[in-house]
Every structure is written in structure tokens, then in C-alpha cells.
Length: 324
Image (cartoon, rainbow, N blue to C red; front, side):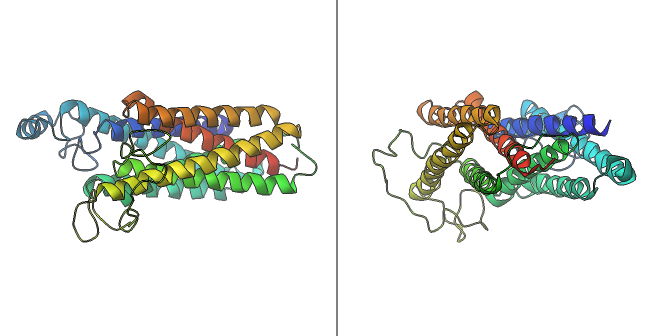
């Protein structure tokens, strides 16, 4: 049962990340401008008068019945995951002798999901502040990585290689590279900089366009503003977008080389091929987002691809670390 629940938690978390991306990219993050309810009510149906009034006041604003349902469904799914992780942590503590493993990872995962819930609340109450929204994405990806590792621990794995010290270090670097690129991607999304460069492979007709990094990566500021309250310039948004492209190039080269090296040495060949395939797909989705002006399905798939690539690199690190 514990093994099945860990697998369910991994799938649930992956789906929740994709759902969260859909909510954010469809501009429904403030569909219910309070937390945990919707205008203090348990469902948008109970708050339909307040939602209708807000929508009538701002027809093109962030509040509508459809957006409210998107936001609340995401919250319901998130609450379900929190309950599931709580059950896992309790079982891990109570059955640690039968499971023959420390419950520490499951307990840490529970505290992570609690903090993730707090970030979700702050995302709304602090009006989509970039640092909070990006932190919420990081928290979701961290939760996915922890649950994946926990699920992998629930079965026996053959030793991937007898001489894997060097490969383990390379895989750890690969995981760090993927994680950093996800953070950069989150910063692009939360600052609405995805279309700062509308051409490819150039950006605004140049390989190195005019950019201003001074306020682009300042963490403590409001959405669309510098720390002084002025509006971010196009040069700021271009810097955010361009650095994500540079990170994508580094990720493609390093993770692609890592997958090739694993395949060439006959180590975890199926996993290496899967990583290479998802990496290529992710690059293609990123280019399509630019050339097609950020269509919602492709943008959501780009987030899903990032989560899948992270999962595969976590699996790679676990398998190379396995000594059974």
C-alpha cells in the first residue's frame, strides 16, 4: 500500500504542476482573490454574486466564473495532495521497521508540502509577486523530486554500473543544470517575459540584443515594477528572456552530452534515450512558444516537459546511486 501511495503521489504532483501552469498561463491566478475560499465561500457557485459583480466592474480583469473555477479546482487538487503526503508521512513513521527505511524523507516531504501551501496562499494575497510565484513553482518541482525519490526507494533496483563514481557526479551536475533552467523559466513566466523576443534564433534581430540586467533579476519587487516602483522596461524583460535562452543552450548541450555518454557506455540506455527524447521535445516546445506567440496548449506542455525532464534526471541520479 505504501508503494502504491508513493506512486500515486508522484503522478498527482505531476498533474498538479501541469494544472498550476494552466491556471497561471490562462491568467486565472487571481480568479479568487482571497484564500483559501473564493470570496470567503467554499466554491465559486456560493460566491457567484461577488464574482459577477467583480466581472461586471472589470470585464477583462482576472476575475470571472470560469477563472474562479480554474483557481479553486487547483486548490482542491493541492489540498488532496497535502492530505496524501500527510498519510504517507504517518505511515512512514509508524511502519518504519517493516519498510526498513528511515521516515525522514517522507516527513521532510510533508513539511515541504505545507510550505508549498503557504506559498500558494501568498501567491494570491500578494497579488502574483514574481518571487512568490516563482518560489511556488520551485516548491512544486522540489516536491515532485522528493516524491519521485521516495517512490524509487520502495523497490529493489539492480546496480546500474560498478564504476559509477564519475557518472554519479556528472548526473548530479545534470540535475543541478535542469533545476537552474526551470528556475529561469519560472522567472520568465512570472514576469510575463516569454514574448520579449518574438524571433528565433535571434532576439529582436540580434544574437545579443539590447538588455538591462539591473532590475530584471531583483527579487523583492512587485509584478512589472522595479524596486523603486517604476515600470520594467523592454530591456529588462529582454534580459530575462535572453538569459533563459542561454540557459536552454547550456542545458541542451550538457544534458544531451550526458545522455550520449550514458548510452555510449551502455549504462541505463533506455533512460538515457528517454532523457534525450524529452530534451529535444522541450527545446522544440520552447521554440514553438516563441514563433507561435505563446499558444496556451504549447506553453502548458512546455511546463509539463520541464517537470518530466526533472523527474527523469532524478531517476537517473537515484539509479546511479543505487548499490543494491
